[in-house]
Image (cartoon, rainbow, N blue to C red):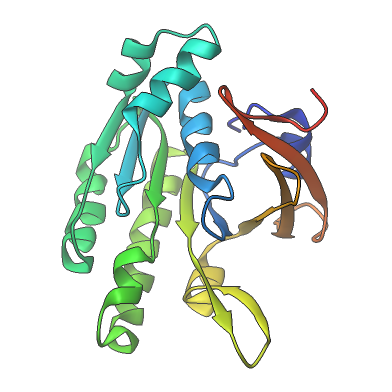
Length: 221
């Protein structure tokens, strides 16, 4: 298990981010998805394969988080191996290449986000099977190396359901065993994490956290 650095969030997740499975983290813009993934990687102590499809990964933010926690920013930056595929086809190649790159020195794989390139493709219905294959490769990596894989997902408004839903919901939900939704609250910096599905924990549990210089912290600290 990898810690999130937030005790209440670890408890919600049954101890932390689990190895050998895909954990889906989804939510609207600026809900803390990237900050959470970066923090898990920072605190893991091992190498992190970080696939950044949205340009959201910030070395400056990682350095700030490391420094504010008394960790060496240079060492932290060296542990993050960054991949920046520019379209869905390149994303497929990047994820495929991870099978050879990720070894025992890695503690985490992050794809942030898995659906950014997918949702801008003109014929994305034809690419749903390809998205499923990419998730299957990531699951293979998670199981083979006994490490967690975090797949970050975007949301869209479903007019029939009259609410925000994760992109490619059926495809992702089929392969991700643990699903965490992040939402904004009216209080600046405050967020809520809701456990939508888990292999061991009851669904519907929630906890609050804050976004700070350190990354994410307990709501009441």
